[in-house]
Every structure is written in C-alpha cells, then in structure tokens.
Image (cartoon, rainbow, N blue to C red; front, side, top):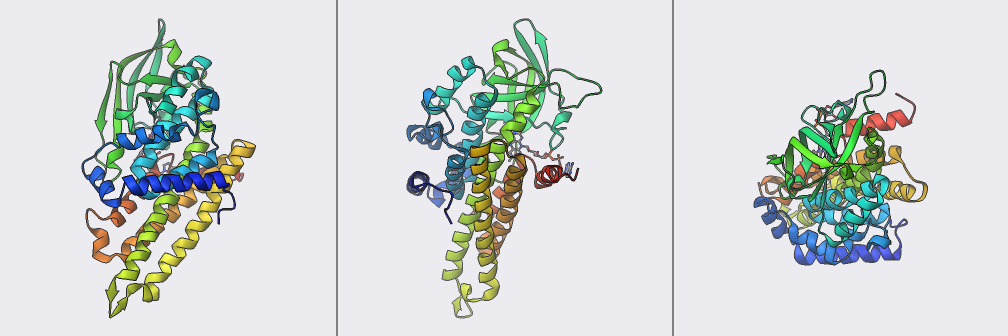
Length: 383
Ligand SMILES: Cc1cc2nc3c(=O)[nH]c(=O)nc-3n(C[C@H](O)[C@H](O)[C@H](O)COP(=O)(O)OP(=O)(O)OC[C@H]3O[C@@H](n4cnc5c(N)ncnc54)[C@H](O)[C@@H]3O)c2cc1C
C-alpha cells in the first residue's frame, strides 16, 4: 500500500514513530490535553531532529522536502495527537510555504532559518467571527500610515496563535466596487508580541494543548517590511497556500483514523462478552474492517494528490477531494472504534472519545467538507 513512498520516506516515518512512542505514550497525551500543556518540548525536539526544516529550502538550512514528505510526517504525528500535528502544520508548514509563495528575500532570510531552528512558529489568521467559510467578508482592516500599516479588527478561531512568534494576518486594504470581494485583501507578518495584539483562548472540548484563540488587533502598527506579497493580492497567495494546508490536514485525519481503528481492533480482541472476544461478533468486526478499507483508499488519494502537487504544481481539486474524503473516513472510523469500546469509549479521558472530538475540529480547519464539495464542484464545471 506504500507505492508512493520512497525508502527515505519510510525510514523517516519509522523514526518519527519510534520518537513518538518513546516520548508520548497515550497517558502523556491525555495529561497534556487535560492540563492544556502546550507541547513546547515536542516542537523543540522536531527542530533538534531536523523535522521543522522539512519544508524549508536547503540554502536556509532545511531539507527541501516535498509535500508528500510533509504528509507522511503529519500522518504519523496525527496518530499520536492532533494538537501536535496541527501545531506542526500551522507553526512550520504555513510559515515556510507562505514565505516561499510570496515572501521577499529579506523576509525569507529573516524567518526561514528561524523556522528550521524552531525559534519562530507561525499562525495563520484568516477567519473572523463574521467571516468563516465566507472569508472574503472579513472586516479586519489595515490602513496605510507613514512607514507602515495600522491593523484593526478581530480574528478567530486561530490555531496556536498565542504561542506563535509570527501571525500571518489577512486584512482588508481596499475595496473595488464592481470587482470581486477577493480583491483588496492583503497579508501581514505580525510579530508576537506586538503592542495592540491580544488573545483569548477558545474553550473547545478537544485539541486543548494546541490553544486555539480569538485575536484582537487594536491599532496594531507594523512596518512596510511586514507586508507579505503584493498589497491587495493576498487572496491569490492564500489560495496557493491552501493546497499544502488541506493535504496536511487530510494526512493528519488519516493518522487519527488509523490510530482509532488500531485501538478498536485491540479492544475487540481483548474484551470478552458472552464467553468470547467481541471481535468474534460480525457486527463488531465489520465496521472496523470497512473503516480499514476506507482508510487505505483515502490514504492513497492523499498521497496521490500530494505527489501531483509536488510534480505538477497547484492541485486545488485534488487537495479538496483528499481533505473531504479523509475527514469523512476519519469521522466514521473514530465513531466505529468508539462504539466497539462501549461505555469505556465514552469516558471523559478515553482516547476513543478524544479522537472522535479531534476529527470534528480537524474537519473545520481549512474549510468545512461542504466548502470542499463546493470547490470540487467548481472544478467539475458545476458552479
Ligand atoms: C480547531 C479549529 C482550528 C482552527 N484554526 C484556524 C486557523 O488557524 N486559522 C483560521 O483562519 N481559521 C481557523 N479555524 C476556523 C475555520 O477555518 C472555520 O471554522 C471554518 O472555515 C468554518 O467557518 P465557521 O466556523 O465560521 O462556519 P460558517 O462559515 O458559519 O458555516 C456554518 C455551516 O454552514 C456551512 N456553510 C457555510 N457556507 C456554505 C456554503 N456556501 N455552502 C455549503 N455550506 C456552507 C458550513 O460548512 C458549516 O457547516 C479553525 C477552526 C477550528 C474549529
């Protein structure tokens, strides 16, 4: 089933697995989620092992890895913790890809080596209270002032923002009556802390270690050198950033789905009712078997889409198909595994419940499954 993976990718996957198994056993994951302990040590170790350098070009100290490399890495982390996988996606992938897509030489010099070193984690602030799926409805503004820009508005929910050193912030810089609302959006690199930026943590039932925030921008002044890409053309660059984001999101969903099924299988083999392991009941084994087949198919789609992105460039339709399918499969897999575990699956500190809740959050980030269907339909010529 690993037809897309090279010996090097298989070796990296094994290294990541060994590291996570040794340092983040299931009880440690429950503890960091219970205590809302931001997984700083995980991030530091990723840097020490060269993994924060995967998406960074070699001239900046990275390993110039592919999107498929990133998917393999994130899938493995997702098996252990969606908080940690999302921290990596937002902290490392968003920053390096955004700089690659539209950063200046000065910005790349400033931030890319720091991403590799694990000293600069990124967050991507697009969503707003009134602009979720309809992101072009954003009301956060950036107005020109001497030597820079003043940002006012509110963003949220934003993954890992309070602990990020840099927040890529989308703001409206212009309106163009008669043209698309997508025109007039610009991107800014807002260092954290910066005067006027404040955070409130969202109270979500899972992914607590990630720390998902609402952000307020109250007269935040940044310099002209903080503009990422061209003024008013931020939408285009965000669209280009969405392929790797959605593919990584899909990969982490595959990871959590596989972990749920693995645990479900183990539970079904060990739990006895009516004098035999419940695995012997077809009603128990078949949902697990079906989910395993779905995971295998979704994984192939994710790898194929990532491969296409690496070889041919932008692949919005395939990225949306992979994200939608992987998250659907993961929702079914984590529900099936929870059902197998009966009342134990519903305990507050059960991994079965945790994974089921994580998939709900994972599905929302990067655009819901309905929005992915809209994108797929658009590329099919249906909209
Ligand atoms: C854990 C978590 C982390 C997140 N991290 C980030 C982040 O780092 N950065 C960031 O910018 N955002 C982030 N988000 C926000 C996320 O991208 C949005 O929640 C998502 O885009 C949906 O927006 P909304 O919640 O406002 O729902 P709404 O847009 O209000 O949608 C509500 C419902 O209506 C449906 N809907 C809306 N419009 C349509 C349509 N045209 N066709 C069909 N159905 C439609 C949606 O699918 C959804 O089911 C995060 C969210 C979560 C939960």
